[in-house]
Length: 93
Image 1 (cartoon, one colour):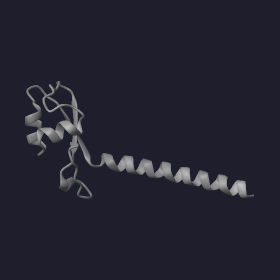
Image 2: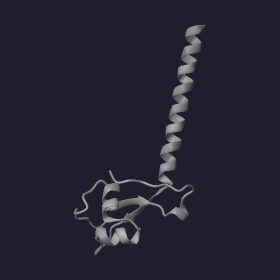
Image 3: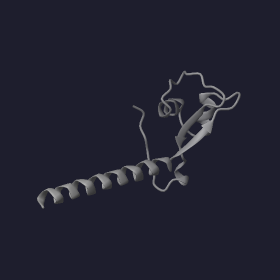
Image 4: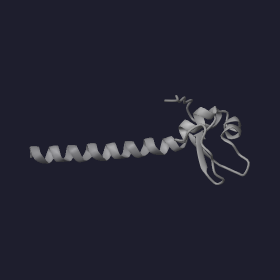
């Protein structure tokens, strides 16, 4: 009886954790937009357009601020405050 209860408790905890993780992951995508690099774009011009610094944009995409970008490359950035449900901030590490 006790083993059955413990097993049930473990299963319920795992299911709850997986559901929570999926909800958090889905919610994170609500705060991101994508920019597809076009001919003539630079990190500086894109950063200005999305109201970020070059360092912030590069950090968010795991590239160097001096990296060359390619046409068709997808860069992610946070949605503007007015498009999100909650105000969020982020820091450069």
